[in-house]
Length: 124
Image: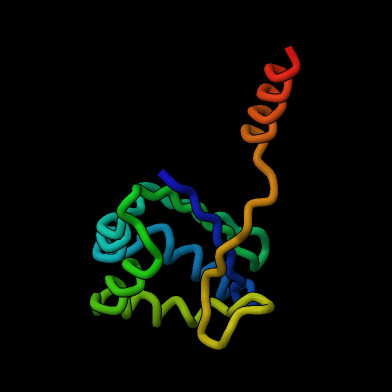
């Protein structure tokens, strides 16, 4: 299993942010089905003001390339994505038309503790 973290900004307009939140209370079943078929086992989206943060848990069959191909072939997903562009904008550094940007992990407490435990074992 892998975890991916991505970020995206919404247009900084309270009414649009509220609408976007409402859309995500009842995501179209076809969109959810497409996400599951791509190998995503869980997905959560968090919001702070107009900044979004997505956590995706995936199985070993998942790839961003596979997901992009599946999305492009699914008219309902394309309709959803087109609707969501009303609310979304690329973050600084995103290329034209680029939405969710993959984030780089810079800290893991579990990895830190594991490394400390290994270091302790090596000094015994």
